[in-house]
Amino acid sequence: MSKAKSVCDRVYAVGGSGLSAPEDAFVYIVDAGSELVMIDAGVGYGINRIEDNIRSLGLEPAAVWHIIATHCHIDHIGGLSAWKERYGSKVIAHELDRAGIEGENNSLTAASMYGVDYRPVKVDMLLKGETEKLRLGDMEFSFLHTPGHTPGSISVYIDTTDGRVLFGQDIHGPFSDSWGSDL
Image (cartoon, rainbow, N blue to C red; front, side, top):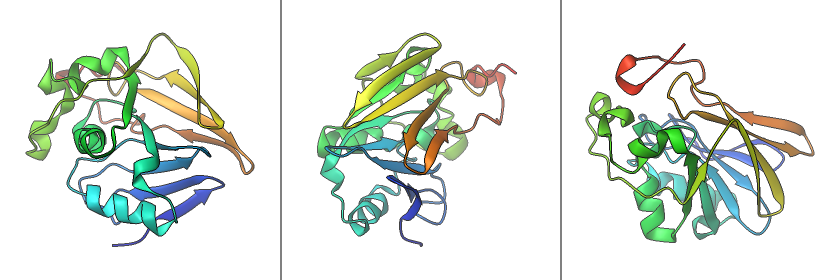
């Protein structure tokens, strides 16, 4: 397994195939000064490796105060429960994917495709509408509702000294009626 990788100023890849567990979607850490913001949490199998990767950057996993769930699929949200239990991290997601994340409709998580039992969590901050902005730490995070892959898929962007960074996880698909995809 590789160690965490710097993407650009204040942004690091800490999870994903080759970094944590093979089933994990890419997991990113944004160093927002007074806190760390995580983009997605992986399937859950690689949490210890993700924690080690964060520490390898000289950062502490306990500083992950917010986790942004880009959509409700298991490879992005399976680790949420562990982060909430260990560190009290707050989950941010779009209201249209809340039912999957909170366990009201498990088929939305696509967990059966991975053979994973999903442990639902409460979404602490629900995004609504097409665009929103939140200040987390010393950075402004812009949220764009980008439905298609799932009804509540979001893309997130931030501005760094290296330029604008867009997190657009799975906007390319795959697409399935079983989880509400809509090309």
